[in-house]
Image 1 (tube, rainbow, N blue to C red):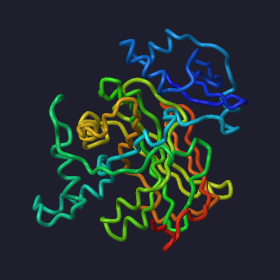
Image 2 (tube, helix red, strand yellow; image 1 turned 90 degrees about the vertical axis):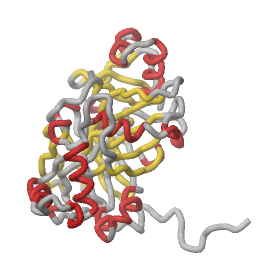
Image 3 (cartoon, rainbow, N blue to C red; image 1 turned 180 degrees about the vertical axis):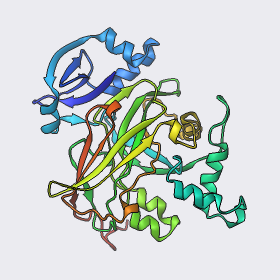
Length: 330
């Protein structure tokens, strides 16, 4: 089952079930969050809740996408109650990276911090079910205000040194009224980061992640397939500038999803009832690694057949929202 959030011509919101080129309204559902909370309260699954509420009017899906009326598949009416985060060094990555690690002859003293953490993940990232494995790299990306709807451009602030895509799978969660996290499903995402800034010094990783992101357009309900093969490409002036496949699913990861989820939700501040979370699980495919530098006007297209329509976003420069010396004094 694949679900979307969308807007009617009058701006009213709806939740819809995608079937081919049609979107069927889920009756009495104006947000994915409220639909999920209703399922939690009823002791039901999200798919079962859709069945219980039934389907109504149909809409032309390609038209909704073209008119930018498809919303991210999960949000919160108060963006401050939506947390965007992610984990890195979670995928097996290129053979060259692993070879480099193996060439260190197992001596951790000679490894970089990056390769040491990757090695820990390979060794202890998939513990026995119900047990905790090694912690992954974790980062904060922002709240709901940084999320760009499918089809819209990423804002490029003046201080940005790069505008690079990161094709990933994200887990979508709602915190129930009992403080328990519930996973609705998964979505394709573009975690969009500043790789030039990050490469200067690994301590700049936190800065490099404070950018916009996008995910969707569809929420895939159910478990994540073990092996996923997707496509990530960049178009410039209508021509393909760069294209590569990206792999995901646990078969291509050195951490289990259960381990990644545990090390996020083990913190009590992330268990506030009613909040929503989007957690990116990482990637091993970047155009930046191939020497690509994007620019305003470029278009990202990230797709995986199991997730329906591709996620498309552009890049557009924006003015500074704050300048040196502009802070007020009380």
